[in-house]
Image (cartoon, rainbow, N blue to C red; front, top):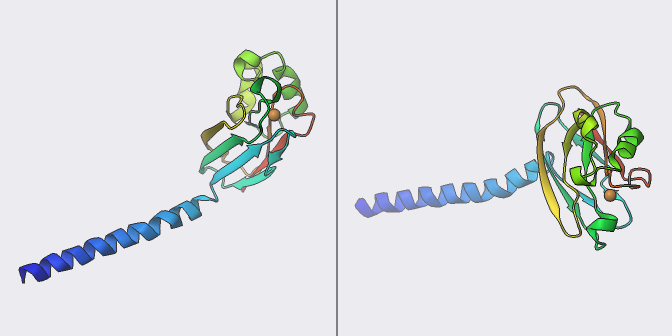
Length: 158
Ligand SMILES: [Cu+2]
């Protein structure tokens, strides 16, 4: 009887472990909708250039610089801006602010979330709450010249 009970609890444990084992990948899969990876490369390209989040949700976004060029000449950041922000004005204002990760202090109120400037092979995880209203929100790399070279994208809030 005793050993039966032991067996039963072992089975229960195994079932639990099995369940957790299944739950892990499922969670990771389910999380792919709100855990995003965006890359930046030496060709000044974001990939992807669009992603979608649910309004008001907690977003985890990994930004990775997959390039090889030095940070001083080809660093990248990722700054998500408020809806309607003037992207080129934001990028222009950023140019003199290497000491602030190329974010103009005056315009920080337009930033929903931003990484530091990353060098080759570096990544940073951003966590933020998505805006509560639906719409398109621009994101940019504000390293000098990169926004105008096309390092821009859109966060769609649904
Ligand atoms: Cu860049």
